[in-house]
Image 1 (cartoon, rainbow, N blue to C red):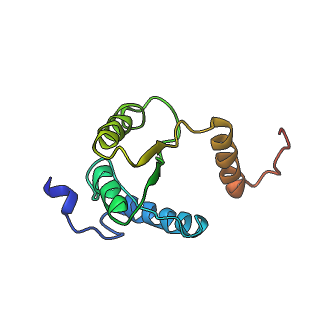
Image 2 (spheres, rainbow, N blue to C red):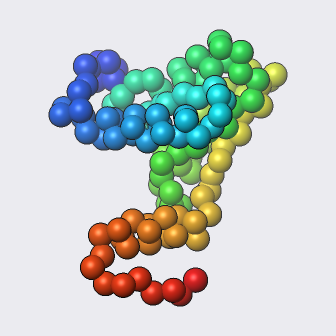
Image 3 (spheres, helix red, strand yellow):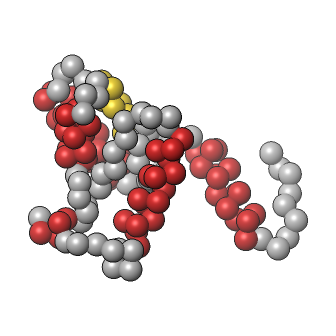
Length: 127
């Protein structure tokens, strides 16, 4: 797909730029664990390409996470599991895990912290 290889910049694709910033911060927190970034649509690399690259670097255990936090999406519930099933059959010696679904209480806690950063009202303690 030509659009996947289209040259992107922070001004032409702020989503990719933002995701790369999150990934860079995440990688620092993973203490040297091999790390890759992949996309479902429009950007490269694909999940398949990223997994193949990690395997080429010697990974024998790969955990895939998504930025789609809530149930109900075809990418997170159908497409990613299908891709991982295909890759598992292709690489039976590699443990491929999918870190999904998210703990929705943790997602809500993260969103509450974000909202409180922008709020002028003193936060409640409902926890």
